[in-house]
Amino acid sequence: MDINQLRCFIAVGDELHFGRAARTMEMMPASLSRFIRLLEDDLGVRLLSRSTRNVSLTPEGAEFLGEAKKVVLAFDTLSLRFRKSLSAQKKILRIGAIDSAARGLIPKLLNAFIRQYPQADIHLTEDKTSSLIPKLKSGWLDLIFVRPPENIDLVLTSRFITHETCVLAVPSGHRLVNQEAVTLDDFCDEAMILPERKARPHSHDLTMNIFKSQGLKPHIAHYAEEKQTILSFVSAGLGLAVVPASYRNMNADGVKYLPLLLHDTIEGLPLSAMWYQGNNDLYVTALLAILSDNHQEMIDGL
Image 1 (cartoon, one colour):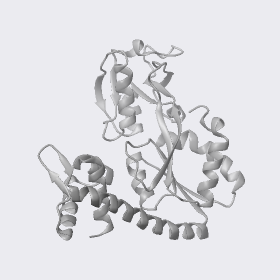
Image 2 (spheres, rainbow, N blue to C red):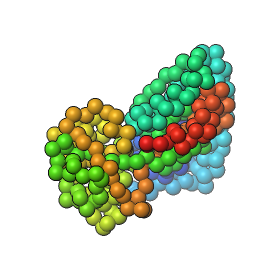
Image 3 (cartoon, one colour):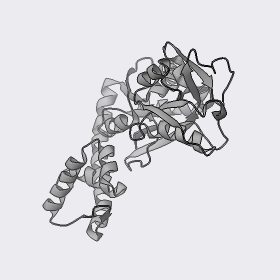
Image 4 (cartoon, rainbow, N blue to C red):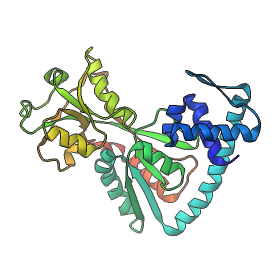
């Protein structure tokens, strides 16, 4: 039995679904299943009941899940204790951010932070939420700015920041480019470009919910995961896309961004900060304090 087997079991125990647990762990379902079988063989007890449609915890599995979480938390707390000491010596703050935060929130936040801590060595990693969370858990990052996941690991703390405003990306020669703002009625019949839900669930759901709010379904012309690909498709006239307002800062030839008026029930894309529970690192604490003390200033324009 090792710590990785425990992490795999906790993921399956929380999700009760091998596919979703595998995505959380960034593993193939077959590899995740093998880890669980090795754990059960090592313990000599069946932890999960499996059928073609359902996964459930056995009584022993339910008891083991609670104890496994305690062990993983103790392990990660011990690791964090020594990583904090090393970070203090190096004076490095390692931040992870999704693309919209890297362009919208992070520059303002770091500008204020550097004024207080000019000696800080800051490393910024830009990536998807699904890639940043494992890097945070493994200790490669100290603090991340991401879309909040459906399930948050008990070793992590999350703080909601804001819902980011969204705009409609259209080709520069599109019939709507001269409008000051648009509503769904203006583009409900247009082809749409959006990411697969498994890659960017919040962005996918936002477009779907915008249409659903008026009892409609979007005509999905293409799926694209990366921001630059989505904008390239828009520029080529392959469809329109709902994107964070911070995308307006990107150099995307042939794309115009129109303010989007949404139904009252539709919120923008959520943005949260996440860090290790109990992490009292000076830089992490200071950055979060700056964000809290200057919250409205930091989120203006997002």
